[in-house]
Image (tube, rainbow, N blue to C red; front, top):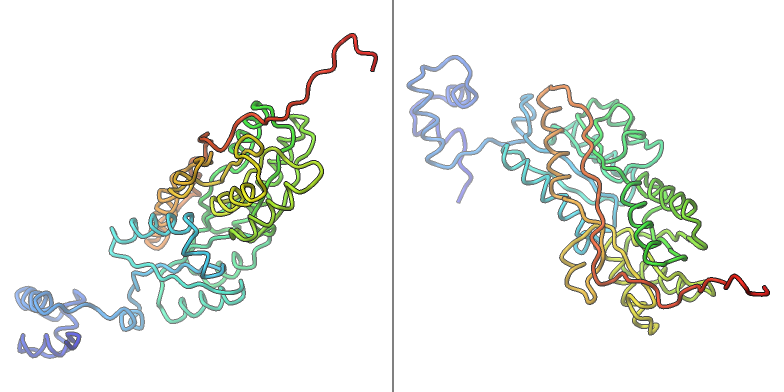
Amino acid sequence: MKRPTIADIARQAGVSKVAVSYALNDRPGVSPAKRAAIKAIAEEIGWRPNSAARALNGAQARTVGLTLCRPARILGVEPFFMELISGIETELSARSYALMLQVVTSPEQEMEIYRRWWGEGRVDGAILVDLRFADPRVSALNELGLPAVVIGHPSEAGSLTPVWSDESVPVRETVEYLAALGHRRIARVAGLPDLVHTVLRDQAFTTACQDLGLDQHPIMHTDYTGEEGAHATRRLVSSPTRPTAIVYDNDIMAVAGMSAAHEMRLDVPGDLSIVAWDDSPLSQVVRPALSALTRDIPAYGAHAARALLSLIAGEEVEGVEDEAARLLPRGSTAPPKEKTLPVPEDSEE
């Protein structure tokens, strides 16, 4: 079926297309009775406004833009982004807004997309993710005048509105928990090294380990994929001073790390305890179930969308600090089998 047009409405109503346009846009020039009749016909035949045409007339696109500079294949298996997007969509759909999503290969391409979307009137605002230090996207979006919310720490958000959660508290909680179980060598398999949240977690991890006097606390950076998570695990557990616990930056890498440990005939959690950042159904269906840092990711996305819609409406919006993740112990963590015995007081050594 052909998409209904203003000409179709005008023909049924017996008026000009200009009159239909005035009525549908609530502009003066038609009587209240005629306006109501025209809108009733539009509803009956299923007419909807053309967002591109509305943008050319200065109307809102009622669309929010989000670009992701990640391999497209990751999005199909990465629970974090799927849950984040679900939260964004829930808030947008309740306000009759749409989400325009595009995967890109570089930050430069990402900015080109935003410039084109804003210039063509395709979006009313944007959500920025994967914040970097001295991120050029922050100043570029500010110069464009595009309403934008940054999902990232306020220290690097510039004049854009940040939505973030504390990274250091859950990291310290995890390290203290593992140390209380008796672990002295704890490793971290982290994400991309140039992201702000990765560096903040790295710093919190190193500080917590040093404060507790832990012997070894190596950090390995990856691209968040299962392949990289497994590779990092093999390297760590093959070292002479292998860790007895590893904390991963996402559940995909943690599951892959568990598989790699099993391949190397290590028992989880007896020989190796595993903790995943961000809980998901994937963390719960593996055996043993993964201890995880859990938080309400859909709510995180909804808070970002709500803040952006307020900006689009011209309101003053302060940054939003979301709840920090909390540790949820499960079967993948336990005291290590090997323990360091205290030296007797009467020992000659």
